[in-house]
Image (cartoon, rainbow, N blue to C red; front, side, top):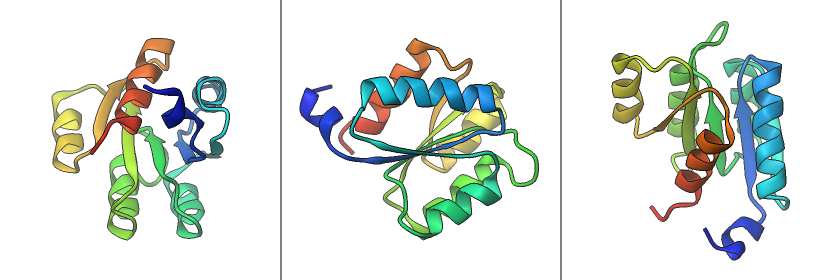
Length: 129
């Protein structure tokens, strides 16, 4: 990834019910993409409300959350804003989850939120379409 890609001002929405996961994801993106605006949502409903205004460019999404699942949330967000790039960042690595992500054209990255898994997510977000 070029320095130019990282330096562009983008908006990232981190959606995860785990505060610890959100903190790890935020720390990674803050250090690698200092010009990005980063927001956090602890639920699907909160994420939908946050994306209703100025939608994010990118979203990292957990699958298993109270209330609306990450898949339901991502689907709603993409219907409203098809240009958003979503990475499903989850410990739910069952084949069914992978297939659902694929059917929604969402990139799938397995947790835990390590340097390597988050780099994989960042590489996808910045890859040419």
